Image (cartoon, rainbow, N blue to C red; front, side, top):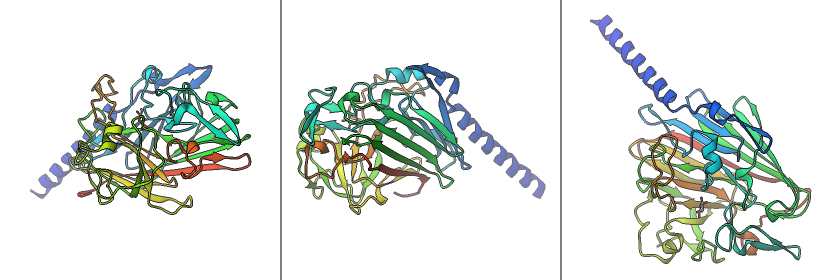
Length: 378
Ligand code: BGC
């Protein structure tokens, strides 16, 4: 009898382990479909994997996160980051999937700003404004990648005047997957002329798995008592408004869908949540707790820590089912969300916002941590 129990237990464990393997394998991204030359430079797929089986796929085209596989509370793996299975899909991508956004993440009003008395003109790719760095911005550039055990450093030199921004900007973004199941992203840059800079990552998340249904059932807590209201072109008005008593209050945590359809001017302007929160943290650049995203059916969570003062939360309001992801499922309205640790949008045109100016001789550095795990409760 005892032998039978041991046998059954072993058989169950083996079945479970092979199920896990199968899950992981069926999620694998094929590196051959990323191996190509773009703008005369080699593009590849890179993989980071730790002992708990968390796997992160990246490509040096746009320094993008291609996939993030994590286990749910039963050990079943899913890919929780939206993405595609071939580089050709990334060349057609218009929604900044997984990339580094910059040189200036989010919007700059009228696609222009004044720096040291000189006016700079950027590319208008969002009405009269500029969004996420311009026409051929960091998301469409081939970065140089170097893998070192559990980390990959991507570097790119953005030449003086590229997309209208002053200064030769030497950028590096390093992704490290730690044994404690956290992904650390370190952004660094130096310039040879005074410029503005705001770098962030643009991964779309669904903790049930990419291509699954809505994210309105995800719980979100954002460590912010204030946010920056916008006009109807998503440009900050300059006001720093309290979240208390508004649908923007995520301080105690709530389901994203709870208030998203409230009758509220700011939600109307944003077509949902598409705003910058002012994180409650030290004003210096030490790491602070920003947010926790959690999903009930899988138990998965991501805890986010950052050195940045701002946190853009975009609730996937422009996803409309016309894009099909890696799993063959369409990316439906509000079926993924983005959080961007960042400086505030349009800061070069708002003196009361933390400065995004970088001078020669200074080092730009932003650090963000995404901690992956499972919890019974938020
Ligand atoms: C912005 C959205 C924008 C989207 C484009 C997000 O970071 O907040 O307004 O439509 O990027 O993919």
